[in-house]
Picture 1 (tube, rainbow, N blue to C red):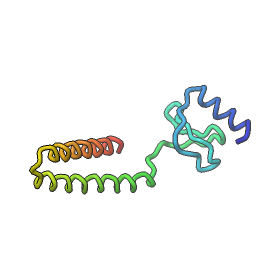
Picture 2 (tube, one colour; picture 1 turned 90 degrees about the horizontal axis):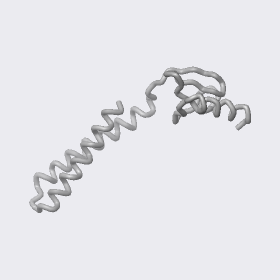
Picture 3 (tube, helix red, strand yellow; picture 1 turned 90 degrees about the vertical axis):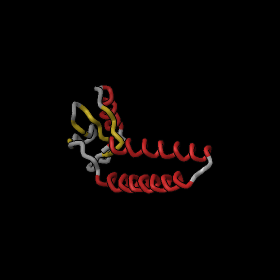
Picture 4 (tube, rainbow, N blue to C red; picture 1 turned 45 degrees about the vertical axis):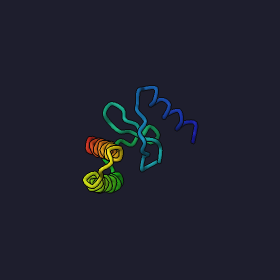
Length: 107
């Protein structure tokens, strides 16, 4: 990375910018959130923060897998007679529901 670009990135950090986990489509520099806008300190490109479509599809698959897991756990729970195994299944149901809730909150 060029010293000039590194200096621009450092300046953005020092100014209070928050480095995001995405890169500029123009110059591949790291994008920052600064004063409510997403900016690239390297090339000056300004974009609006958007949810990427690439994240939507994997999250949908995760959500579907979690629902399938809940169905499976519910069936196991209905058939189980051992108290210890029943408790384990209930804990798994609880953690699966918490994961689903976190996914919904991130939407």
